[in-house]
Image (cartoon, rainbow, N blue to C red):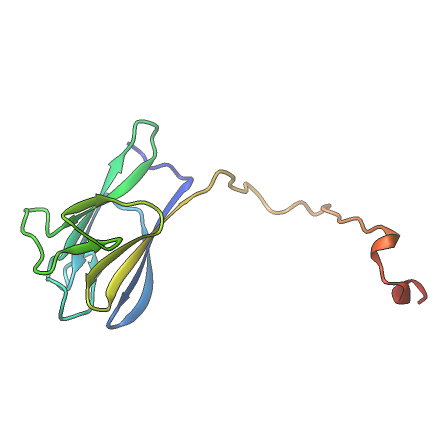
Length: 142
């Protein structure tokens, strides 16, 4: 099923290397310390394969991401996941959910649904009208 082009899914990560933005557009992501992970987390407190993001579709064609503790083979991480302050094995992510992987390693998930997408350049004849009452008296004396 094709992804809805009017949706943006974004993960803002903070770890030992700083802050980075990761746009989400694939079906599956592995997150962890291992260099082979799709999204690498830099911290000694993060498991090699700490979590997995899986895209899930709704009937209307929209989708969301589900985060699951551990890898796709079912092996959980050492420290688990704290999502919005609760320790969970899996969670269907919603806008502004906070995921904590370990001390000073966290992510915020953002879902941006754009109802309006511009299809071309702005109108070159877009004019803003100013009435004389909006101008300062000093400017009118010039």
